Length: 402
Image (cartoon, rainbow, N blue to C red; front, side, top):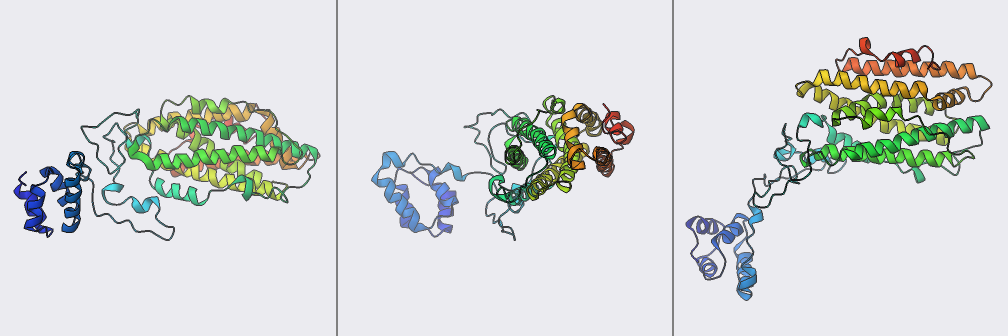
């Protein structure tokens, strides 16, 4: 075999001697393989040792080509760890941090890699538009989720954090645990359903959504444990109309608007209220942890919704319609879920003797939830108040009205 002049020249640049080049030409190696060795910048002694191995078993070793080295990927990249280690945002550098508006590959090619056209099998992905999934800073949100992870079995003081409560207060807390545990289980299922369609190029989004599924698992586990840890038990299952907006979504963004924007906006205020009115240290800690998780989910939902409105041709119009659907399903759930609202009244009143006080505190919570939500929309440039769901608006006046 006679080496091409380009291959010989590259070898000479690397210090390959004439004797080594002659030794290579006398072997069964092909020029393409030798060119790949040179492309890897291997020194002469290592190339010589490899040629010896080839000569020992020419039939087998001649099949090695090293063609994997021939990619269009950026080389020589050195990611620098920061104060928190080698975080996701630290490796999103150069071409590896460039996310195209439309992902070009149907297979499992990771971002920054390039598929082999001779070995290409399309996958089941259907979401290729960046506007359908992206949120600015989603890689940082993922790292925040990893740092804030908690374990219900060990991060809550089950041995000393609970105390005996009046029967009606304990039952109210257990009913709330039952309701929110159900929400968490459905949240897990509905988000997991969307993993398969999201293209591999948007791995940052899938990683973050994976943490949200994990957080929802915390919710299910911790709330069930709380319901069974202090002499109570599980209560009535929720109505479930809330889930219609999640399951009925035809687009990923529609589901995220209903779940991570409309519902999470209300859930953050709800969990913070449960934290503030908690009667045991464990309950306060539990709802504080869940509120932090929910606020992170809300942050992703808001960032994605903003990106969608800015980059999708019908972004603002679609978002307005989906907000309406999310508000409607939430309104139906809250207004017709007697178990949840009555449990909140008892918890806020700390018993049955001052039920009117509990009703007033529930009204204040509903008012705060509405104001927080409208303020979020205003901050996004969405004038939602003229189209705001009437059922949710009436709750701020009479939280017991159906």
